Image (cartoon, rainbow, N blue to C red; front, side, top):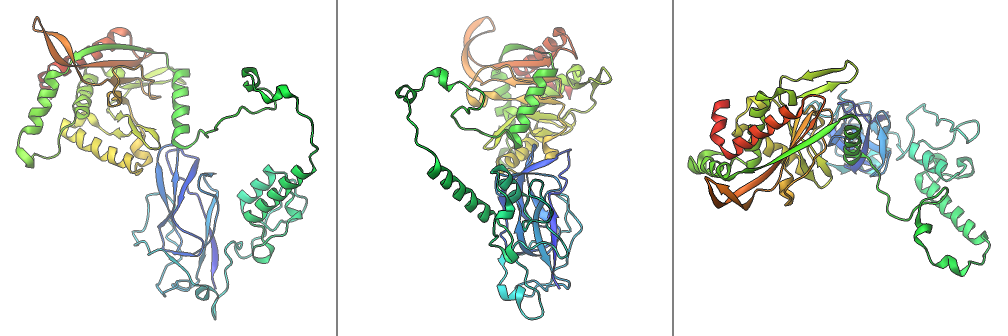
Length: 460
């Protein structure tokens, strides 16, 4: 006999409590294998695919694409056979559950080819018909506050929420689902009917001629009136970025210093590095990788900037390892992947890791761990064609180095005017962890390494 099991949004780790449904990977009626990804969700840190620990037939999905669900909310229900392969359309054997519900932890079982189960495969002889949204055996729909005593024939929390938002009494609706189950389409039909009735019964009133012209004052927000315009929810990655930047501004007394540097020798050194060894020399070293290596050398000299502030203990915590974040712009917003233990890497190793993380960011495959635990951030806003900026510190870090575009400019070199490759460097730092002398020393050392890359040999 089939059993309908409910799969809930699992704990995604890193202290995350909710996620937004980006894309469903299965439909109702599909046969899924154990640990097969069934939905793509976006958390405050990354987009991840959520695998289902059950193998069987999908009988219901909860939540439309774009909906935000808390951890522990139902994602879908799966009809699982009491014997292996009972619900499979082609007789393939499947176990009932892997027991694994955390993202990234699976049994290694191969994902089944997505297929829609035939009606006769579920409701044929010797089996039980499983409707698309039937509750688990023995389950009784719960009473809803405001809907009176006793159960209501609806199991979807989204349907209940939609009804509450439009002041609909679910007891007055007749469900079109199995056994009178109230579906989302039933509620939406009732909403449309109520809206039509309201329009037809509304009296026609005279509108003053002056009301046809909107003045700037009439566009201002006021009690009971919404301002016209598009509303974009602050959630997912965008919401997390907004919360972190706002917290940084509230808590961190930041200051910024900047300097122009002659990057001509740095660019020449990069060209020499990438030209040595021929085609078999490996991946090219990027300017960002060289700047990251310069940062690790500078942090070794000025460890005050690789720290964080413990407000509760009123202590500055100097961190041993450098987990270097770098800002990356993606289609879904700004993210800061982290190169872990950057102090133990050379420029080539840092560049390879930056390349891997950048590709993962581009394809939406960054994990929460890839975006967590940074201790210092490098922000190359020069890729946008700008020279300078005053970046906001990536809380709870203590500093961020900003790098503008490298562009040809007139420069006094060895006592003569010449055209050189010039870059503006800016350092925003937490004034609680150090004074301007330390920040200036750090920035000056970075600029000296940009102008004379041979200085890095001392840090090797």
